[in-house]
Image (tube, rainbow, N blue to C red; front, side, top):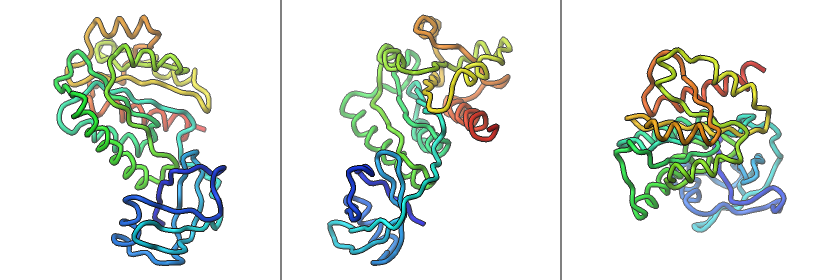
Length: 251
């Protein structure tokens, strides 16, 4: 059953509502749906409903709620993935696969060793594209919410944003080389359902000693992700998989 995200909340909704924007074309032209076809609509507050199409026009799709869906496919904890800007389309990969694995927010940051440097104009176009990738991946993976994709930040801005988190971790290959294996598990044990974790990952060249020092001073826990050295685009997905195993499969 096709799934669409609606810019509204359950509380502010009538029994009938309208889908607008690009999804109108997808419903009418791509999927060739008609009146009485049934879709799933996901709202900004995470609620989902099975809905019947009442009418399709060139401007909108009128829908009627049939029943609310109680089940949620969201992770029981909120995961913010912070990635040092990598080269090429690697961040697109992180956003697409990270959305499938349950991340709630993606924040790129300008690391000292980031090769990519985005000016304000380029960044705005990139954020728009990243948002579309997150939306499509959320639809495909039956998410209840579309992850937020932020514009690139500085490390200091990241540190300030992370103050609200319950747990803050940074993956660092140097401690992995030294055999560190316990910090990730200990960090998970400090999280409870509804908690929030900031997980930071460096770009291809890794994080500098200065950046690591700043993060430790800000309360980030330095952890390894096993004995193998992971690529910049692999490490966040490893982390999200570990989160899912710990909080969903081990319940």
